Length: 589
Image 1: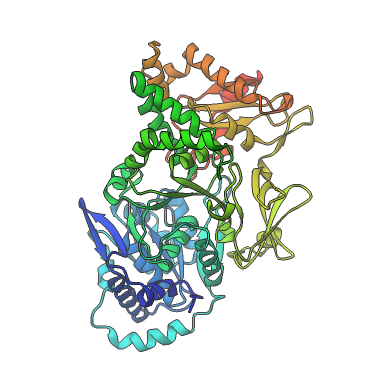
Image 2 (image 1 turned 180 degrees about the vertical axis):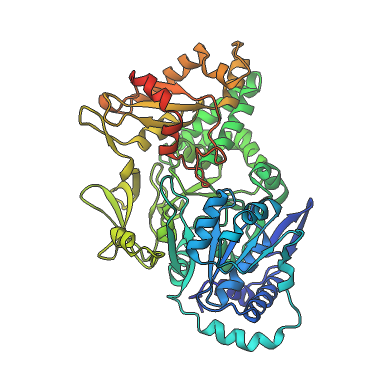
């Protein structure tokens, strides 16, 4: 029997294919696993404890964790079994945002991962009247431990729990996820059990998972719907889940875990590729020539043998001599990476897939639970530069102005406490994504830009900045970029150079370059080489779209400094405000 409510995915695993290592987390340098049986048992224990504390259907329970871990999964399912609603928060947002979300959602309990999060929460907790108790996963002075809920003596409540579980309906609200957004106040997206369950079942059919045998590494924030749905996919397909310690330890964790599958965002894949490319650049003689030959071959990759037999023979050689080392560096067993959250550069899709690691790019939003389309190399479902075809049960169409509209069981119930904004985006059953795209004759979807990001130059020409930015980021010298020029005579760019690659390039070419970021950004040789790359990439665009001028920023764009959202998307408005002086210099304002 297929699950219809989120907590039934674990029950499905427990009844059909139990795992010895269902969840694995690293504590104090040691990997610790729990089996399906123990996972299920702990979920029941916590549910009974929450029931005993008076938690009931419709109550909101907040979760804030610095990293993905076993405890998060247990609390999540324990809450959902009661018909209560989880409210996940990004750990990296400000304490003021904590206060807004906790107050707006009316959360009654909050679970935190560690001391850092607890301190941030503690600074505003007195201003959140709805919170009655805070529990921590780590041991923290003056904070209750979550282990108090692992009560062995509350089995008398199991019968009441079973009745409570039966009263949870498919259409009941399961979670409120506050979108990080690139502008404005966070909106609480209301997703039901049915919204997410439908997405898990349909997405599972597109992912190359070996049921009961595959291993996965999880490191994208589980508070984001993308990674959270993937977790439910893993439960449903009996996939071992290993939680990476942090973004900084992914390389080490990949070698320790040797996963078959993982998810990623384009920014991370860019960094992985740049790191591999830099290592290749440091090789000497024949090895260096072979490396560049393999990369150039990979960048020409087309799926399904479209490049012909000779190309396929060369690729076989490249995989054996060069690309096999890439796979080894990523744990040795990685066969697929599901990429989402932002647009993926075609060069990355080509070179990784050529190497033998298929990049399955997907598209969706928090409001769509999130998956709308997914690429799948099986059955002709992969097309470079496209985000795949709609998954089962979902209909998409393109509005007259180019906006992508979506209809299906995955579309949210609405924005929490905001029927007006809900009515603005869901019209006649179709969710208006705010993204602009096209559907080709085979049914593949291509994203071209965000509707709100399109702007006109003073000459009245429309500019789609994301399309230009993705093309310009083909340059290894460009780590981040935004295209500006609304109501100006021409488009221009603000660029954060890839400081690591620039240092490697300068060393190889014996170019004297200052050690400070300010000095690097003022280097004429660097400016000239970036100008050359921009001119080359400008060939892909019309005269009115070409980048005429640019400025380099002497700092790394980051989540902490406010340049990026927690899912590593550029906060366009914030970046423009931070570097308004550079924009003024470009246009002589």
